[in-house]
Length: 441
Image (cartoon, rainbow, N blue to C red):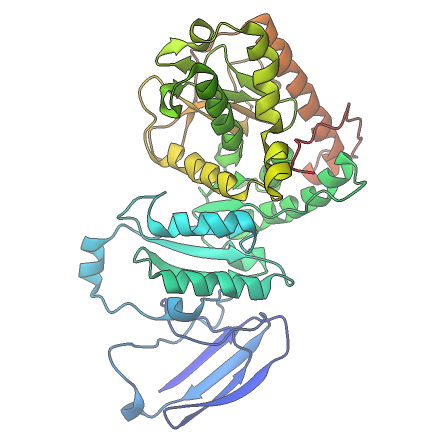
């Protein structure tokens, strides 16, 4: 039997080995097979050819290694390259169709918590198989291999495939969900405008890759900061994908707001509902206590301290990440991962009657009078199909409207600052102030 596969790799690597007394000549270690599973060692991705000759009496059942598509550039990892020994009709009856989940920044701390929640079935369901496509950088590639090894050792039955790589055009192939976590952190002395430009370039490229190779209805959740404007840049560079499918993560802000209201009211978290985070993921964000409820009652009927609601409450939500870092010495990676999982679950499970959730979405056509062509956190409901609708039964007062307007102005300024990345002309940065949330510097 002869097996020939074309692969990609980023470093020159040649190795000769023996397989059951047959000879294999290997240039690189990135094997990619048409089905899902065949073990191979891994280095960095670069173009290479593997040619193996195995006598017919040396092939061991039940695993059948199939020839790869010579044009395939995807790279499976380890045990995730082996073919499942299941008859097609049994697989059809037992499992839903596998969904492809692409994750950027896959070797980082947030992903280190998130990936295992996804693979366990906690997010998409206990009967939903998934394939993970993990994007890293040249520098983080060995860490990606380590992540894949841990996923192997967990023996998750729902995790049918893992692929790793550093090229978004390969990793995002056929993605049904794209969780864009990777971004450069803000360094000492870096202006917010500089961070917008550096990370904006990353998200412009990832938007182009999604546009070229992802599922046409891919759902995209942008986590890397500044996430609202990064999401706008990404969607502007992916015109084939509905703009409605792009989200900026503000669920951690919502979760923190629910926590603070519950603590103040002396109730458990599940008693707080209808919590909205309006606007930007920055210090201009607006935790909405006017429309939120505790035990089904308006918050202002339960918590009568208006000064705390207008000042202390918002400040606690905004500064939570900074306080955590000061106490623990590290960022809130675990709670961010949980909030990503919560954000996905809110889109794939029906929203409870009368409740809603927060997510940063495209404003065009919104019923609130917010400027169009921004990514702005707003209250949404879902019927569980991955889509959502904006909530219409919202009340506003002067305080809420003033705060929303301030966050809107900031996002309009950020949009002008990245015009060169959205195809809207020459960038002009007139950011009013530095509003990066503490803990995200």
